[in-house]
Length: 435
Picture 1 (cartoon, rainbow, N blue to C red):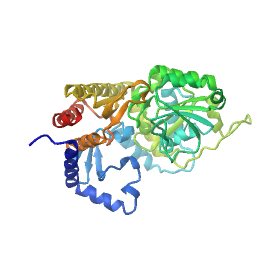
Picture 2 (picture 1 turned 30 degrees about the horizontal axis):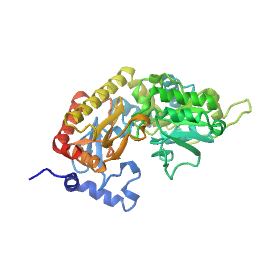
Picture 3 (picture 1 turned 135 degrees about the vertical axis):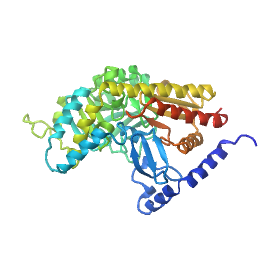
Picture 4 (picture 1 turned 90 degrees about the vertical axis):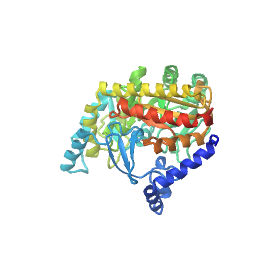
């Protein structure tokens, strides 16, 4: 019997997936009677149905079908501490004993703000329930915002390409530019209309949901110059990237933005978002200012919920510089070895890995030019991407369907070696459909 084609392999993989996960299938069908798509978080949907999980411990997930998976998704970067950190668990249990939902100021929010401001060099900050909300508040005072194709700043601030933005986006005036394109930024300097109207620049130093593409230092510096020349606010979205260096990627690059947005892991896995920056900007949210200046309302019932506040304080105690560097060093080595496997099996132009530190994305398709990221992937091979995901899940390794991987502080060398082993098994079996 000859080698199977990609379509044959994918068809078989789907049949195996369905037969191996009957409880997940049943749960999806039941939930779909009340939830569009059977869930309430679109990124979790996957065809023919997503796995249903019933418990988690350390870096493992247990499904409704009695299967155990090594978790390499890390709750899309929010699960940096794993699923059962004892110190965070105790912090949550202790604070719940004291009650929750005060409807007033608690002791922990000021302590968490102090820790965050000191870690990231932020003068003043405020909390939200998610990174999406943090980005919304950061651009609230802007009238025209420069963003970049491939960016994702939340479900209402999504820009899949230079030509497209989500129909759910908030109704701000957006200018969508090509990411990592220095010549484009330089051309904007010559546009007098833009110089007069541009109010903010919102950028990820590494695009997370957009495929883990890192910005060059030169590109980020050019954005700083554009912000200076247009008197606009430079906002670094560090919701994902703040975990890639002790002071965030802005510290690594040595570039100080006017504002920073944060979220994901900083409350130890509880809901959380944060925006902050220069005091002269943040004072517009100070309800007690006495200078007669503008005051903007920033409310949110759960902005200062005691669970997130206390868990965040403990989480930042756990996340020392050494712990963070160790995790990101492990990720750098993992990404390097994955790309070496792609070379070993001669598929490096059809399968490759990008990222920084503990965050990475596997790509399948026809590899294009990296300059400006305009043609980073000339043609995406969605079937190959799907086949890879079914292979990994079938072998007990969980990651995002789109190939996104996020390590946690609980991952060790032996876990990475298992991931590499499963990937090599995939390449041994399916390299022929990628060449």
